[in-house]
Image (cartoon, rainbow, N blue to C red; front, side, top):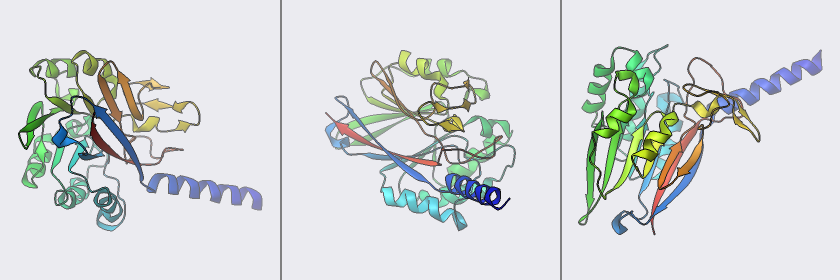
Length: 265
């Protein structure tokens, strides 16, 4: 009986640490299209917070972001959770990180599901966040430029393919924030350079050697759950995210902050 109790305590400790510790994953993206003046640009990606809390006033999460010293911060949806909607808790993070670097945001399916998405966007705009709802923004540096595109979650009623079709093709190196990794082929077909995505929660339960077990939009043994995927000239970075939603725990799947550095070839 005591042995079983010890086993249960150890398993509980592993699950707690595995759901409350934040892992930083560093990815380098190199391309001939990256302008020389953007060489070394660092981006922190926050995805799928789902109203999770990491320390008092989100101190542990904010500390991780600060430590990365980003030039830009991308929030790729599901900042809140529609099942336990607590906008104030998630805005606590945003209020602090807007002081670190410019913040760009796109919706996930949970923001749309609240039926309060306009209010969420308004609050973020008030904090100085760039809300990219099927919009683009050009960043210039010493005469050179890159483009940032944000795709609204398709639960809003506009498919990702239709949203992307409205953007003109340019020679600018293009970074895209889009919540859904299962739309990878749409990103490839539109010849996008780098897509930042989330939604899959790393497959929720990660099986060593096999990957994630289940993901929304992809079902069992999903293809796109974590890390870097490449096809032709398109790269997609999928964050495992930070929080949980319907399934309340992760297994072998630590909450993740992604740090991407651009390298000009």
